[in-house]
Length: 338
Image (cartoon, rainbow, N blue to C red):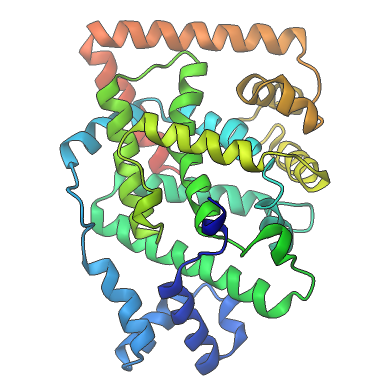
């Protein structure tokens, strides 16, 4: 896996490099980054043309849209719980990756010095597109995110003299991207299971297959794109074993997230219950290393009730299809409102 810390995304990096050469570094902070690349492509700039041409193609492997739809439906009808897992499980645990979190600290997007709310809602908006829109919309949002990753790499490489390549490898490397992809995919399935929501093998593999498709368009190499949920979960555990050694930045990022969303949208949980929920989902060892508070009695009771409710709803909807359809419509409405 070490070699994947030295690999990034050459196609996107070339497009950003030539864009900066022609338009200046200010485009790195521009919300019009995609529009600039698109215009340069129309002007005949080969690097930008080559980048955009990739999104006109489909992956070299067969995309099973029927399986994907089953996975999508599983997530959408459990969208609220999926959002909990993403924010208080997947995202919090990802902060423990001491090498990867240096990118977040460098760009100041998830600390007290950056806009943590904006970053989280951008992430949820990305999930909304993946879950509710067609493949062309998915390709478009992936194109934008991929350019953002390349812009971050350019910024760190050219503007930060103190980036430790020997320790951290290249910023937003292939391994980083594969690990991040798993936080949206297999880690969500695992987290939902902890909350009492267990998908069928077909639903879990279909959901993972959707994110495999997303990963392809985010520029992740095929050797890091797994075929099944279980295979991807094993890869996620491998990356976790390699990099989950929390440092002070990990604690800062975690505290910033929990404080920023305490008693606020989208869940309106107190700081205490948010911390309890994170501890439950990531485990006591990692929670202690991130300096999360000890589990409170009320938090423990609340989580047990939540799991019981989820299990009950999952059981009833299996035998009562109108409930399943109602939960799907509600989940679609909740996601669409982001």
